[in-house]
Length: 267
Image (cartoon, rainbow, N blue to C red):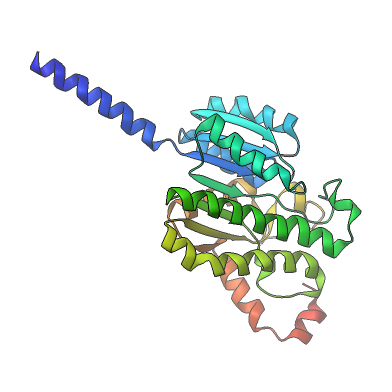
């Protein structure tokens, strides 16, 4: 009888431990190639995934695949970063459907041909600053406020090495990413005091639909490899890392190159 009771309690504790290991992860911009690969990795770890993007049909196609891969639960919702009111609805929906969020990965972005219908109405500078910069900053602030109430939570943002050094060839894009880098760096003290984890991710050249207009080269990395680096980096609780790691050295060198040479190289 005693042994049976011990076994019973061990089973209950074991179930609770398994449940507690399931993280609720929100992925914004979940239709991007990198986000899809991150979702696949998290699915194999048995986490609960909430996918948000403009194209709901594409998200729903991922749902069955992620469940088969091992995700404990998968929810999808339409979300457009250009519509500010959607952000409050997204937070409420996450709370209602999966009981809140442990980690949010902000993975949406715009590069040349990847414009939303709303963004096309703006000029190139406004388009980049609004979609890549301001919308990301507002999402970060929203989840900072939400996580502050709980005293816990993690915010991971996919930025870019392009924000490390101003270059004529992608000035507007780089400026929008620098806005994210600047904001995240400035939040570190507040986040630490509130018990919130921040992760700033700086990919280099990643082979995705967003970069298919660029010439392939030896510096390009697959989205799958990039996602492995990203998930590992988030789990290690680093504040900032490059994807792959060698882009940290590339960034360092770019910062040392005189502007006249950089402009002549057109990199």
